[in-house]
Image (cartoon, rainbow, N blue to C red; front, side):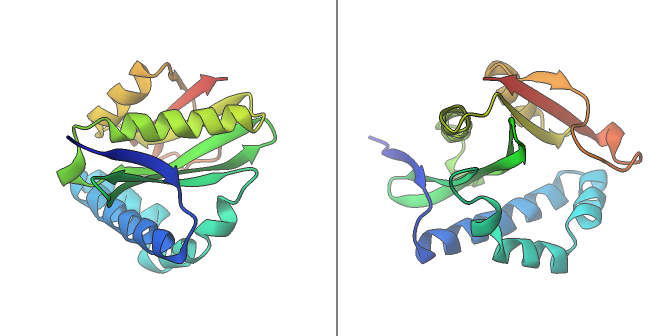
Length: 170
């Protein structure tokens, strides 16, 4: 039987695992397509991403955000985080499940837990973005009641055709 657990990241070891998953996610995005590699380098060049990794606990701190990890049979295999983008809006960031752990519903459980936490924290909507080339992510968000919307923050015009934006009212 497969044991799945979604829980907040609370310890230094948890954060170490989260950071590794975030680097794996960045690497994955760079391999999706040439345009995704270009967008990854544009938005998150290595020095900027390294600095971001050092501030995750602050950026996603309670009570306006959270960092979750997904464990499969005791192994940390996925992550997702949120933060307050606006007073009424929580943004989901860096949702990722390692390739060997996909197919168990972990991404769905992570999104559900992030949405539930945003609702409990008093937000009235959740937003997120993804690459047009990440079909499984797009299908997941649509199946969970997220609707298409336009950009919710400034995005360079050349990137817009390659990104999709979603919103769920809470």
